[in-house]
Length: 384
Image: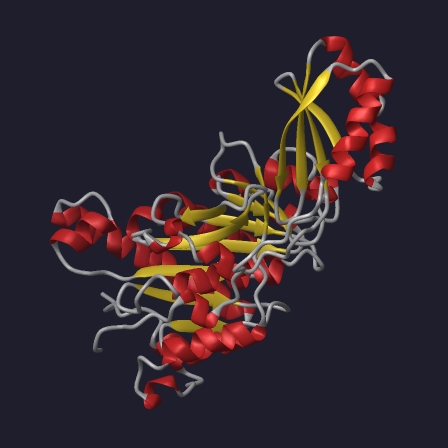
């Protein structure tokens, strides 16, 4: 193949050229009046307007003032006309979190940033925080990922975002994608690309996990014999070996097909496949299905879930059941505090534009779907 050409992010994905700003002066003036009327000694330190929330930080002069502010929470909620506004104390400061969605975040906003463009690994867009700072997860350093969220949580946007992040950063000579879809979201559009393999049958998904374990064992032997430490060392000193990104969008479908086989294979892969260049992204509408596997996947992206049990499985804490649509908690590892982000939205038209732009790098005959192609192109390996 001649030099592979990636499209410019802004040519295929929406991005914000300008973010909306709300006039906060009437609200902060009313806050100061309430402070004066109640003998509160405090000053407003900062006002941050994010894409999904406005945060006002207040510094109380003493403990009595801080306590009074918290007691007057219903009054402040009336000022902002938001019954769901959160008022809390942290490190001696009082924070007013007002869930005004100033702008919907687009996937292009998350990808049109230095962190994504300069990443030399496998960058995955997690979302954008209150300060409009994109968060990028690099699968080269954190090889596997759990994602979960209920049916109306924008989980499809998150999964499409992971796929498009990979497609817009990694060349086909360096990666193969295996997308095991279920009831949703629809992944068939990616089938047009020769290095994207889409399969919806759970039985085929289980067989793929077996093949992955064999491929992992083969790669471990090759890396060990060569004296290298991992796939990156091996690719640099011996030969290029493709990364394999495997996304399972409905894990419960595979569990229903064969729970023990599925769990054993995923546990093995989660523990040992990362240094071999095999990456797993597991997703489900019912994250409680991850209970037996969660410890093997320290990196999590959790959207709104249906109940507290799902939140505890994903984050080891409550809270995800109260998230709004499109919001998620991102936890990079076991010790990291979850960060509240807004997932980037993506349309079917944008997906078509990305796939068409990438497909233009291939001869037309390579783009025709082949029903038998999934297994024919599964791995370029020789069975011993």
